[in-house]
Image (tube, rainbow, N blue to C red):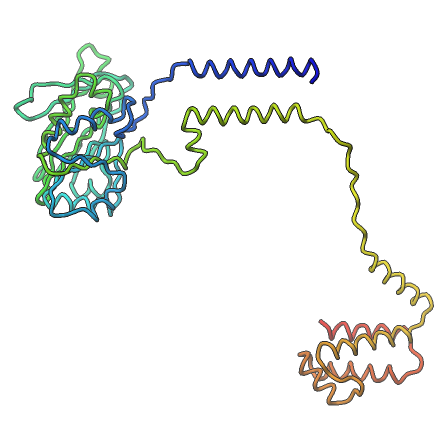
Length: 403
């Protein structure tokens, strides 16, 4: 290898090594995306809450559900009472899922849903709506609970918390369990802030069971569970009575991992991703330094041309120059009669009325056209001399017959 190539390769290796080391030692940025999965330890995951469920619900079997609630509830034991917890930034249940969840609650079970949205079907059935007021600043938001045991306690939220709240509820079947307190519009710019109190936690009776709906799912995340707001979650979950089984939904989550190809799995694993990138880089280096051709150019051998067309044109030209129309007509008649014998299995040694009828029947041509062709053939065979006009007319009749 030339000295220049060695220097270039050394510089490339040094730069690549520097990039790899910088990526390894660089601190990872904090991931603020909403996840709410039981395994995510990021700020808006639910790792802390999920691992505290056995403490909050002693003597209860905690089941993590990794399939749709429709599939689970359609095959679950309907005689055993249970609770179901769904937490995500958006939960949009389709009609089938909403109906089976409503039947589940009507049988005497309880469902707690913490989400900013609850789906069209479920919202229409329970007669509720949610909304929020946009502000340009992350100001302090507070939540309170209506129960007398902890009514005076206010829980503060100062980051990534929306003032999502219920704008309408079914007052006959619903009970307000908690409120959200926030500054509305641009009033926070004034010296005296005007605050608004709206319901964000309600209980809706349905059949023999209850829905517990909370429009502030952020309160159940790791970030606020570890920032002195764990009591709010504990108080909210205390409305669920102790039952033999508690289902934790780990399926309808924004952070659920979707691995639908091996390459996606490779790129999601840091070690495998760097191994893949290094392999690609090594192949590029190999291709660059092996780009020089190491053997002589192989000449392209043109395939042999089909000379049968040229031969036919030459023979036809010779006949045309000698103007031997009789020989051409004789050969054309022989080939056409052989065509009739081979394709239609008709004896052509004697051409008569029966020959015309059989040929017309088998070829699908009209009897008149077939008889005219055969009569013309008989006429040409009886003539001693032939003209160019005879040859042209014969060729037209044969070509018309074969179409």
